[in-house]
Length: 187
Image (tube, rainbow, N blue to C red; front, top):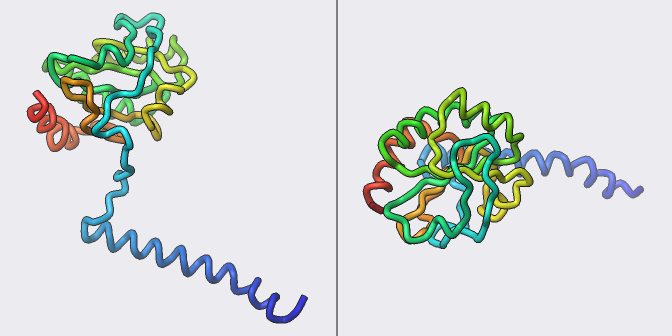
């Protein structure tokens, strides 16, 4: 191996480290200035109708199944929430979903890659905020919606157009700063 090739191979890790450090520095500067949002993974579905789907009901759950046909010509905005019993952040957001449900906000649930018995037990233990509840055991509907992980929540307007997406748990701050104003705007 010639000396120049050997030198290039030895310097390659240094080049990768410098590039990674520069990217990390740019991210930190963006966080400091507010121009970088780590949750800002865009959704191609915002501004479009929900993808076509039909889900079976979750066995043992008191809410009926649903599909995209149930998301058209609505009386008001609705939330569609992807969740699972094995999802720790789903436990964090559940009190906010229960609060919204008690306030009359329609929430439709899609149980993601979960065992039906575990999901039913979760709802028995923590309460059921869902007016309708479908089971997406293989995860195909979540892929069509562009779900990155659970929990993930979408707000749809009266016409069934997706207006907002939140990847992660609905916290009290998200509820007050994002969801409540959007519910009023699309009422």
